[in-house]
Length: 195
Image 1 (cartoon, one colour):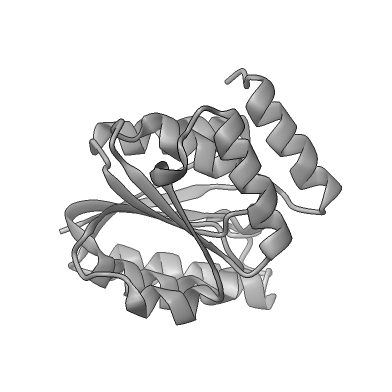
Image 2: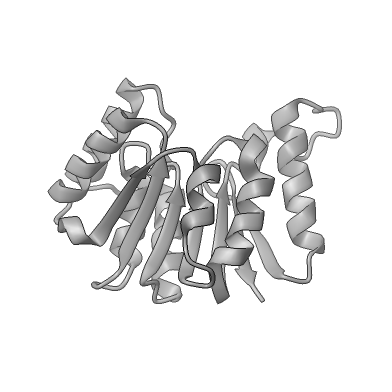
């Protein structure tokens, strides 16, 4: 998917600060999922420099609000600028600085249409548990990095990240609360609809 100047700028800034932003294909999938669900309330765990946030906002309803959480104030400052440059008024985003696992318990139950997790794989299980509470029935959970750098299918790969991703994928697949699908775009998106 071609990216406009705003997204190319956000991606360049991500590279400068050492972040690996979602690929254009993964961004397009996020926009699609937000649009398909007519998303008005979205939670993003991992603001970065705003690349995924812009893709999500572009798929959301015009009155939608993106709640984005990150521990890095500097990254959020950049993202705030990117959101403005993309034409989104301040009321379209709620930027919260803090650890996701400290912030998520303060968000309302069943109030969200989509939860996007773009954080360390070690936090996947806790984020999946939180998403189950936060999402309305029919809401969508999306985990970025579900292919674990291409190691997910290698049974010899036993590093902590790969094992954690496998466990999260297995838990979602075996749960009666989720209808999942692995989308092989970017670093792998595991999308799951809450039953």
